[in-house]
Image (tube, rainbow, N blue to C red; front, side, top):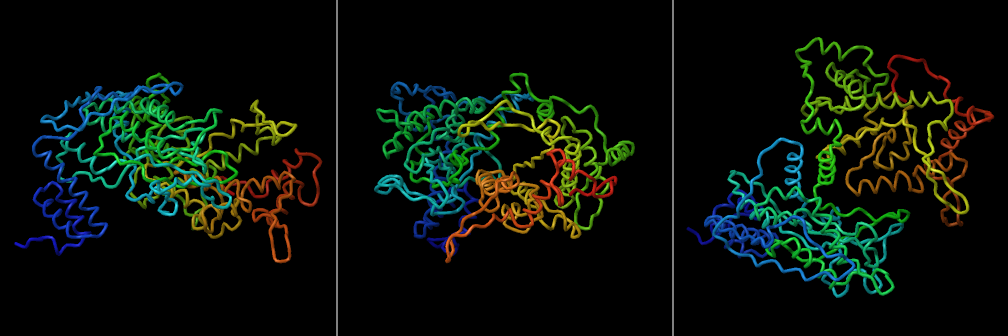
Length: 624
């Protein structure tokens, strides 16, 4: 047998073999020996992972697991000294020990009450963090946004760095990370995962972040974010799975304590920039406080440059450290424990059971009721070919609009390509049509706005704030999913030119804005791709603030305040209207404000004029 049995294998093939045979000690020994002969970065990274897996395999074979001895029963709620006085010394975590016994696992009793369901769900989400393999993964793949902290000066020191045009510069200091493979391997060893194909974990999870401005000073609000995973590892290794459900309480105490460690002020109370020592002390405090073993933790090494449009006062969103379900689960748990759970939450958790179930595939009476003419909406989506919905698609639309007027949940199941998005379009069309019908019921446009009782001081006068009348609220739709791509597909598909019929040439709705948002040809701004922080920031900047296509420019023009953009040319500075205010748009605004060829005497007349019917009324008109 050759001394290097794996010499003919490429690194990609070795990675695949490692995933398949990570529990085979003899194979791991051969793999470590082979990778020791290879010098590429990818091979050395694989060697590090194999060594880690080999150590865990050896521990599992002898029932010896390297975990931390719980010094305080691994309580999830941490005690933190107030920021007003110096914090008392925090005992250092006990050195990792080798135990001959597994920790005593306190297995929670299996119960189906809402509180237990939410606690179990929270526990799973606490131990399911986002991960990264390279620092630039935290910056949408842009490695130029990564600022190393191991240089002679921190990025904001010695005058700092320049920002991008029209952008404010911030830094998100990555306050350490967690080795996902090492942590998950030990967790699986403790909880004896005996599945043939065990879940794989690669890369690192961020331990915490500190948001600072371009001068290195922590921002005023929510500067600190902490990973639930780093807190949850010691809790889970201590055998107290039930305590994982208390993350929301523990998070508040940890954020308060870490904020006190980083928000340092001078004698006059002015915040000071972070120093290398402050960052290191904050990292050490957090690791010691949560009891995270050194075998899992990696110290701070870099920060991520983040940018925010200069007109926005709030800082950019922090990097996602935790499952985005955790905040919602905490809110749901508060509602349940306080007895204020909504009917839909009770339905979702199984507290309210359906009064009856009817199978439309077999129950002809139920099918007939769902297809009653009075349940058909007045609007339908002008899709390509203008084909009607299939039978069960129309049933889903009718039942959704008729049975869910106040609350309720309707499940529509079907594999990809069976028309779920198609029926969703008709629901959108029905809601737009219904809301337009209500808008036409107002004799005065001011009636659609109710004074909120709030006002803002602007110069020597006040700007009064109004809210929408309740009659025209509740027609909005949120497309949500645990799969971001699925949501983006729906939200980006609805405004596309391909989503409407070829003969719907007059169907346009702020097309200039929509084209800029989606960077392609669209028919109108009917949906927005939101979700993550970058998408929401990009939407806000383009939809409202953009000088050429922002809606605020359009509304300023419509209110009688002409909008012009100054541009430098070879012959001097010239002014032009924004793209959203083209000559055709200006003419349309003037027509809507004053009517065609004459100026009505009052706002009421201007409102009544465009409400005159210009097309025959039909049972199911296409939306305009």
